[in-house]
Image (cartoon, rainbow, N blue to C red; front, side, top):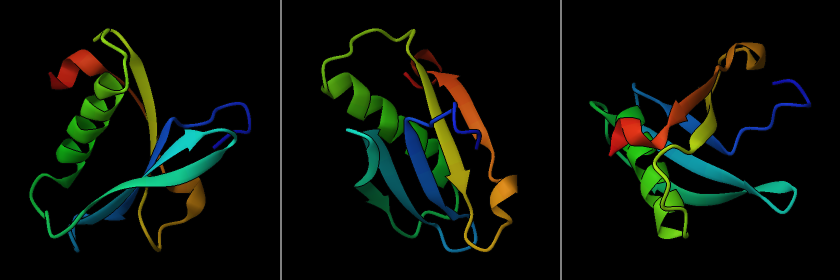
Length: 92
């Protein structure tokens, strides 16, 4: 990830285990905010839905918000962990 591009969230995990952790960028660093366990079918989709719910519940009612998250798969080359940009309206 380029220094200029900070993801709002980092999702760490993989389909093989179905375990995911979510970290939110706040006050200059990332903080653990949620975990998903044993979801091998729809973990990433559930992750995005949870992030959307989290953003809306914290006072942002606009579904046009663009969210940036990075997917980190344990064991994968850190330069190959993609950054995704998506709109809240895609999951509500």
